[in-house]
Every structure is written in structure tokens, then in C-alpha cells.
Image (tube, rainbow, N blue to C red; front, side, top):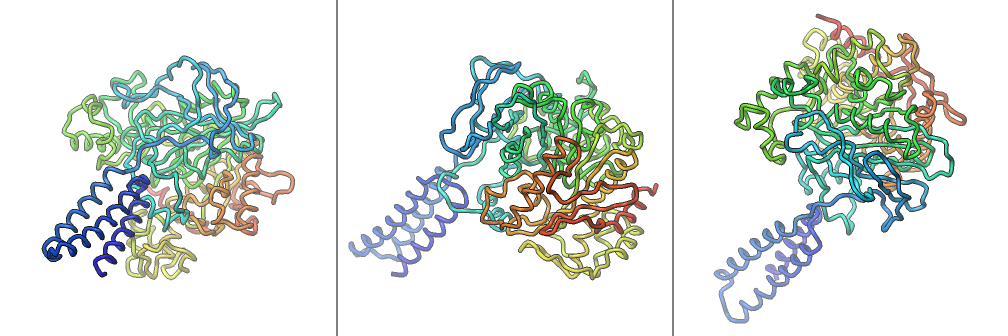
Length: 603
């Protein structure tokens, strides 16, 4: 009996592993058969009078080997995600653009047309690796744009680990049939998606152009939390896309600058973003969009990218307004997502040494899967003299930035997820602050945010915590995230341009108000995991979506029936708190900003 119980328990645990690893259903069936085989095998041994001690070991060994082989053989297949959730969606009418004819698909109630996986540039493979994006090729016939394109090359998280993250992080994991696959990933990744409302009007609609985040090293355009279906229902067109990441997008080398007609290197991902924006400007009218009313938007590294596009000479005239969530690079000494050209070249040298090559041409021969696993860091933009010609703050000081209005902000617990492995105590608190701003300013910041500041109201279960963790998270949320918005708003106010800042504080059962927690609210995707949200969440999301739509249409988020959102005034640093109650408050981090200002302005 003990033998049978152990066999069943091991099989059940194995089935859990298969589920979390997204192995195919065949793997489950084989697992059950193997368990039954174990029990039958034991009975046969007893029946024939064979010693369990001797032959039982062989039986267990065979069982373990077979379940390992089964795990490998039934690994999840690669698949591209469908553009809409409804099965067998109806195709749209044919649209004609410069590259050829294409169709999209309708969502379930036919209120939105979705065109997914449209190439906006040539595949950056072979000799086009580490080159500026090239013009997309034409195709023959009618292209069915009904699946999202592949995600850009990146270090892929194992399905088992990804499932655990959704269980303990997002809290949105559900056991269901049909998810036994992993999303397609390829170096051939330069595709975009268009979400357009179904309308009988000939009036051209304003456009929201969204850049996904992920530290410039991860992410995909298919992610459910920022799909544009619901915003499109409100009368705007939404576009998102994939761009080159990590080494493929931000590797820099002198030989690449020499071979480039534009003498550029190190910003290929940013150049992809600009190429996508140019494609939208050139083609969006075919989808019902107004090329003269484009708003660029992004979150995290995507927000930093928006900031870069606001100062790039290559984007002048391509958009009107900007939406920026949880990052920026307009400070004098950016804390992340931006590095000096010298730093970029040095990291490029390290990558060539890592792969044992002397030139970038030789790096083009390295398989993409291998290159994606480099130990070197390529998560920052740089001054390449082409896409970015000077430190972004200098462009703002000259008043030469492009955005005519700005909607931006940050979340209450921005840094917490990035600080989970750090234990913060009263003894090491100042030292931890000093890593970012040096000893002198760390001591000053510790006076503003003392070590005994209140702990967070929520934390991840693996957080190392410590009696000063609340203080550390508050400080680094200001350092790494919200300070950049304080500076960006200050520049806009000094220029006399309208700018509106939010502070997202709403808690929930998912990402709450941690980094990226605002995404499903702002882009209208709470319904995709509705069991994690309540009526107050949906009410807040409805208001936030309308703020976005109003801003995309007019450059002002305010409108009938909405709480008033005051613009940031020169010297008046108020933010709109987005919570169960929506109200204007003083920025809770204002004291920290003044200390960070001192550090930034020091020579």
C-alpha cells in the first residue's frame, strides 16, 4: 500500500510540474499511464514472487527516467497569440497600404477591428543585425493580420518559473486548457498592431502610439494588460509594437558607427521605435487614423523611450502629445535606462570578448539564442549623435523638446519589486542610499525619509524586508522613478506647456500599486482578470481611460463628469491621486526631490 501511495503522490506532484511548465495534454496522459504501470508492475512482481527490494529499485528507476523523457518530449510548442480572444473571428474588409493589401479581425461584438503582426520594417537578421531599421518589404496577395508577431529576442523565463511569478506576483494564474504553449520569439520581430474602432464615420481619429516597458531587455506587444481594444471603443486608434531589445537593440561598437551612413550605434531599439512611429504617420489614415493627431505613450523603459523621442531630431513633427508612466531620462544624471557613449562602447567590448570575436561583423554570425544570453548589460540608450544628439536635459533647457502637452505620473510602490532581495535595517539604511547618491546626500535624504518610516501596506512574500525597508522603498521609488517626472514636469511648466501628473495609489489583489500596476486600469484591461478587481477598481479604470482619451484628443485630460485634474504649475507641485477617492494632493515625495536636486546639481 505504501508503494502505491508514494507512486500516486509523485505522479500528482509531477502533474503539477507539467501544468506549471505548460507541457501538452499528451504529457498528462502519459504520466497517468506510467503511474498505473508502476502499480501494475508491482503487482506483477508480487505475483511472480520476485523480490521487491531487488526489482523495485529497477522499477522506480525506469519510472523516473520515463517521466523525465516525457517531460522533455511533451514540452510546450511555440505559438503566436491570436489577435482577439473570440474563436474563429470574422475578417475585416481589405485595407490597402504601401506594402500591400491586408485584413484584420473583429473582436467578439464587432466594435473593434484588430490588425496584428503588420511588419513596419525589414527583418533585422543576418547583415541587418546591428543596423538601423530598413524599409519593410512589399508582399503579394492579401496578408491576414490575425496573430501578434513574435516577441523580440530576450532571455526567456522558463514556463515553470513564469507560472510561479503569476501565482505569487500577479496572482492571476488559472488552470485551464488551451494554454499549453510558449509565445513565439524571434530576431525577426519588427511588427506592430493596430486597434481601431468600427465606425461608419469618415472622420479621422486621434492615435495613441504605445511603447512597452521591460528595462529595454524584455517585453512583448501582445501583453494583455496594455492591449488597445477597450480604448479603441472610446473613439481613438491604438498602436503598439515590438522593438529590438538587449544586445540586439542597444549594443554599441565603433566599427558599427563607421559602417553606418548615419554614424550611429547603440540605439537600434530606439531607432526601431522611431521607425514604427514613422510607419504610423505614413500609413495610419488607411485604418481611419489622423496622422496629425498622434500621442506617444509608454511605461517604465517605454516611458524613458518616450522621453527620448521627445528630444530626438528624428521625431520632430511626427506627434503632438506624450504620456509617460513611471520613468524618464530628462534628469542631469539618469539613474537608469541611459548611459554615456563611452560606457556603451565599453560594454560592447566586453560582449565581443565574451564571445571570443574581434569585430561586430563576427557577432552577426553568433546564433540569436546564444547572443540573447550574454552576461553583458545592454539596457540603456546613449548619445549616438543621430537619434539622440545631446543629454536630454539640455534639449529641455533649450525648449526644443517636441511634446506640446504631457500626461505623466508614477505609482505608490514603484521600487519595491526591484528591492525584494535587499534587507534594509537602521544600521545599513544610509549605506544603501549612498549607493545611488553618495554619502553626503544619503545622510540628507535619510533626514527626510528616516529609517523608521512606516512599512509598506503590502509586500511580496519573498521580500527580505528589515526594519527600514519601508523607508528604503520610499526613497528608491523617488530616486529611480518619480524624481524624473518631477523634473520633466518642471521643464514643461517653465516652458508654459500644459502638463498633468498623477499618483496611482489604488490597491488590489494583483499588482496593486507596485510598478506597472496602473497598466490594466489606464488601458482598460481589468476585465481580462476581473476576479482580481472589485467595483471600485472598474470605476477608477473607467475614469482613467477617459482621461487618456480626452488627452489624446485635445492635450487636456479633463472633461464632463470627471474629477478636475489641475495642471502642474510653476512651483506648485500637485499631483492627482488616483485611488478610491480621486483628488489633487501635494506630491508625497516633494521633500526627497529637493535633496536629489542637490545631488544632481553637484559637480
